[in-house]
Image (cartoon, rainbow over all chains, first blue to last red; front, side, top):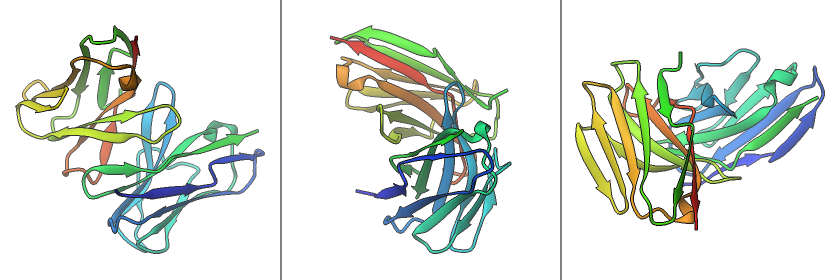
Length: 109
Length: 111
């Protein structure tokens, strides 16, 4: 079965802090995604990529950067974290159907 | 306004009952639809896709799509406590490479 892993699983930082969330997929999928999940909003797309070195802007990109270093690895960067970025973050890879990782819970104090 | 709207927000059914979920899109460009399910503490997992008008049945799950009204539904017959989860509708213009999710419906199946 398709596999997507995320690290860390939980992260606490302070306002203004620097955070990097990591995602790796072993599915050989071209597309990878970062979403945030908040009650009442469902899953909202932050950034996505269709291959190493490529980056596409999603629907809620403000305050986030992302980088796709290889086919397998996709990173989400919060350079000046704010409390509004406290959320549950999911990475996914896709060959049309999306395969999600287990999520990272980020708290910004 | 969200492009993909789901109803109800939550649903409670007895074990063995029928659970029904609704999803309406406000974007006529969406042609591809999925249902995803998320159990507590896990990432969402795809349940089924539907791309053509009409019904699609997979075991206890039946999806229905009406592209003219931009409406898709999911029905679970003989609901089990293990079906208790958050259910998302998702829509795409391009076959799944950029997908928009609804806000979800929480299902509770009581024994």
